[in-house]
Length: 328
Image (cartoon, rainbow, N blue to C red; front, side, top):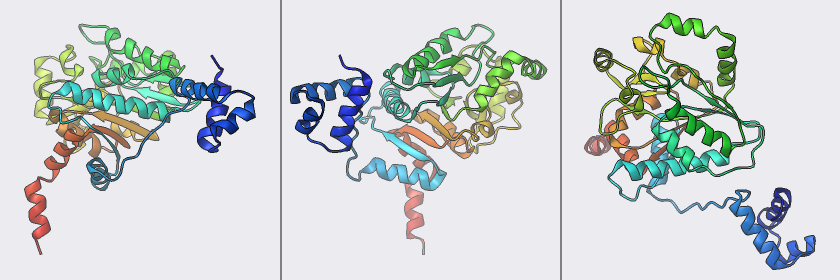
């Protein structure tokens, strides 16, 4: 087994400086077979990652369309025509995990919102060599029937292990019973310390929870709201949530009463973070995805190809687009 520094040097000479395997072997006084094994070891440890860029194909066109319409960078994950939610979730989660491993640098501060999608992303992360990384929980998870530990602890621990990171959990309710309680707790020094780390996040990862559809957000299924409160959200035309903050399809959220009791950052708070990665899949999430994009909270979107088409067709149905093209 070789140390990381040696593997990096060999990989840099071969892949970056374009030296032959024989020349690298001569430089280090080893055999070509040793260099070959070191390059394989460097790939296995994540020191070397190889990516391929295929020729222009439909996902590239989808990405351009999202950028034109919403100003975001869309990363399109192929779902192999899968109609079920499970394969779509796996596709976007693997894609997002690879992006995070590429983007995390020494000293990065990663903000993570708990949920099914981010938990699946965490399961696809490999160990990296990043140093001095911080992982902070963006929103509380505790509710009336649960401590939230089962929802958030495993996710955050996996993220922290992958990036050798110091972990800052956020042990607060997902939603407070009273806005006044939230205001008072936010003044506590222990909470202010975590909020300060949260405000320094340079990369955030989150999803969009669905208010309607076959797979509902854990926000709606873990007893955080009464039936009357759920009816109120419906009356307010809520289509989903980001980081436990509810949004409408047009991206508005500030006048939704329950948001004043939420523990997570608002879309405006998220917009201050340099890079905000939203990871989504599923036709039932289309209105929520539109709300997220229109709120200004997203810089990068990982979405499967089928859901991406659903979003674009929802905004501009194919028949309408064709008619527009034919108008004089």
